[in-house]
Amino acid sequence: MFLKFVDRGKEVAFLDRRYRDKDFDLIVIYGRRRIGKTELIKEFIKNKPHIYFLCDKKGTERNILRFKKKLSFFLDEPVIATNDLEEIFSYLLKKVKGKTVIVFDEFSYLVEKDKDVPSVFQVVVDELLSKKDLMLILCGSSVSMMILGALSYKSPLYGRKTGHVNLQELDFKYLYDVFPKKETKEIVDVYATLGGVPFYLEKFSPNKSVFENIDENIISKEGKLYEETDFLLKTELREPDVYKTIIEAVANGATKVVEIANRSGMKAGDIDKYLKTLIRLGILKKSIPVTEIRSKRSVYSVEDNFFDFWFRFCEPYKSDLEMGETKVVKEIIKKDFNSYVGKKFEKLISRYINVFLPDFQKTGKWWGYYREKDERKTAEIDIVGLNEKKKEICFVECKWQDNVNAEKTFSALKKKSELVIWNKDKRKEHYAIFARSFRKRIREENIRCYDLKDFERTIKKS
Image 1 (tube, rainbow, N blue to C red):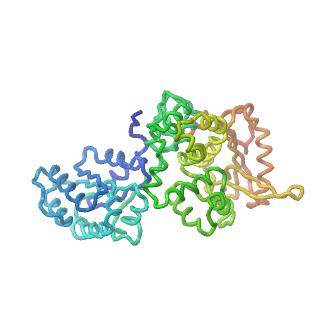
Image 2 (image 1 turned 90 degrees about the horizontal axis):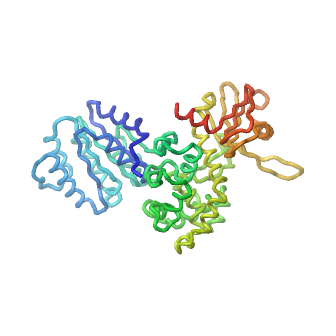
Image 3 (image 1 turned 135 degrees about the vertical axis):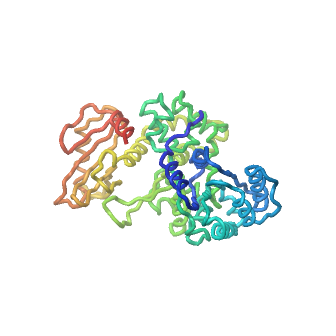
C-alpha cells in the first residue's frame, strides 16, 4: 500500500514559518527510523529552491565529493576543485539567488564516521551562513549520533540551531485516512500491532484482516517486517542481544528493575544504563503513580507498540519462525491478542484523555497496595486525572469488551478509587468508562460512558 502524506501539517507549518523569516536558520530534524523524516522534508522543500543531499556511511571525503556533484547539478556549473567544506559553501553563497534550503539527510552517518564533522559545520555556520538568508537542515535517524552531533550541549553546533523537530508517530486519528474502509475496532487492532509508524502502516493491506497482515508481513520469514526489530537495534546499539533480552523480559510481564534483571540474567545494578538507553530511544517507558511526584514504585513498560508485539508474540518463538513453523505462533497470537489490545486501548485513551476530560491537567496510571485478610494485594486504576487547583479527580476504566455492564464496572472502579488518598477528604470525584460498546450506560452527572462510536466522533473533531 502506498501511504499518502498525512498528519504532518504542524511540522510543515513550522518549517514554512522559519523559511519565511529573513534570517539564517539551522533546523535539526530527528526521530526514530521509519517515522517519515525524509517524506516530511520532501513535502516541505517542494516548490522551493533546494539542495537535498543524502549522506552515506562511506566517510567524509566520499560524501564531500558527492555533495560537490550535487552542487554542480544545482548550479549548472562545473564541479568545484576544492574539497574544503568551508570553501565549497563560500562558493555556493556567491552563486545562489533567493532563499535556498540545503538539506543533509542522515547527517548522523557523517558524525558516526568522523567526530570532527560537527566542528567543521560549526565553522561554516559561524563564518559563512549565520548572516545569510538561507536554511540549513540537518536530519538523522540515529538519535545517539544526532545528540552527539547537533543536540547535546557538548556539540560544537549547540546553540546554533534556530529550531528542531523531534518527529513522532502519526496521531491515531489519521489512521482513519490510512485505512478509510476499516471500522474503529480494526484500526485499534492495527495501532496495537504497529503503532503509528508510517513505514509499518504502509505494509499492511487495507483489504486484509489484521491477522492476515500479521501472517504475511510479520511472522513469515519473507515478511517485510520480520527482521525489523533486529535491524533497528543493530543499527542503533552496540550490544543488541543484551537489549533484546531486556525488551523481551519487559514485554512478557517483568516491570520492576529486579524482575527485569532476573529474567535477563543480569545484576540489578548493571541494568540501569540499558534501561535509560531504551527509554531515550522511545522503546521503553518508566512510570510512577500519577498522584506521586517522586516514587520508588516505578515500573517499566514497552512504549513502542511494534516492539511490544514482536517481543511478546514472536521473539520467544524465533526458532520456530526461522523454521517456517508459524502455526503455534498464530494460535498464541489469536488466543492472547484481545488481552494485548486491551492494554494498548488503555494507552490510546490515555493519550486522548485530555480531549474527553479537558479539566484534568495531570493524567496517568495509578497503582497501590492494600491488605485483605492479612494478605497484601495490588490495585490498579487505568487512568487518573487530577485538577490540583479545583481539587477534582477523575477515575477512568478502559474495557476492550462489548456489551459492558457500566454499573458493575463503576462499582468496582468506585471501590478502587477509595484507595487513592490524594486530597481524600476535600476532593470532588468524577468517573469515566471507555468500552467497545455498552449493554447499558449510567446516566449520572459525574459518570461518563464512551463507546467506540463516541471515541471516533470525538477524536476526529480534535
